[in-house]
Image 1: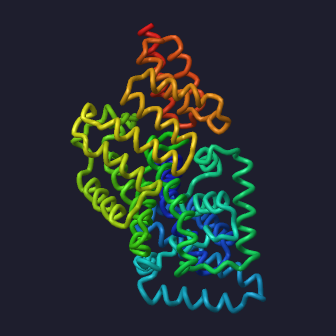
Image 2: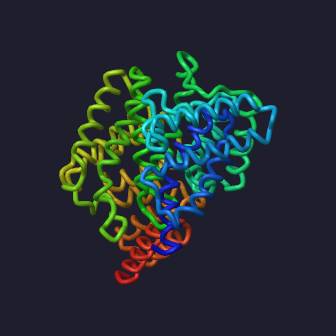
Image 3: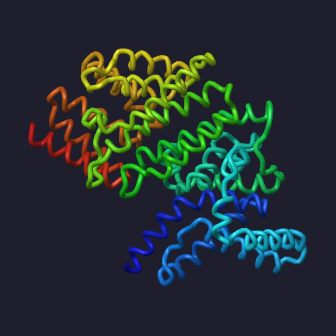
Length: 422
């Protein structure tokens, strides 16, 4: 394997293991910034040693053991932290007694007491602004870059970077405990936690940047944490609503990309490849949310996803119901992105003229000015109406704005089709 191939393999492992590593280290050192530094140190060691020794079978355990040794070195250099050194030294001895890195791998997760879940609730502490909570947790738990988070928020990258730095500093200075809260405090933080999981899943489902259209690791992690959260808060309708939404959306993963990694849009997908087990799990979670009286944004979005899952063919889709659900969703949580989705549904339900009219009303919205999907949706309506020159212009504009290579290629292909049809 070449050096470049090895580095790509290490990067792939890092994407998966970094959140768990940072969460586990935060539990040990009780300092998020230090945990990140130790994790990065472990990555540098991996970049030096794995090209020669090969990727360990339990890469996460290897990284954790390496980071903990770095932590011991750090505390040795800071005598005032001698007690923490003793704790870490004992922990490393215990690790050796229970199978070394193999044993550590088996103990990285502990169900409801999951380190990742603790870190999510810590990052979503009320002492932080809602925007800072989401940005910090996406950085730590989702492994997203600052640029990816900025795209998810439709925000400036420098602004997101400042939020993350300030959030970590605030948590450190305020002594926020590393724990899953109970009772009323847990309920108060739940909305922020759900928002974070939703954004992590969305970044995995439709990656805003990079070479991959689908980042399965992020989808899997968000769904896993959502299921754990549902066990923690079984009476919360919105938790079950979000899990239902993610289950149903995740069911399409195998049908969303071609063997070459090319995007396949919803109406072009082979529905026989949709995962029926995930769909059934999603329906069960949605029924649970409805039984609890749920009518919040995640329950409504899950209901929209269910409409697609119930349709055996694209033509059988109940677009009028979907349009109605988007109307209610827009009333519950007003958002220009929701309005754009409503325009798409109206276009399918009542014709492209209706959809285009709604999109035209969004062109002056500041939050959507740099949102490429606004222009790709407008292009699609123009294409359906036979206004090919305008459609080509909008497809190319959308292609120039996306950071995802696969999506860019798809949009350029649509532009070419509009040119040929002019």
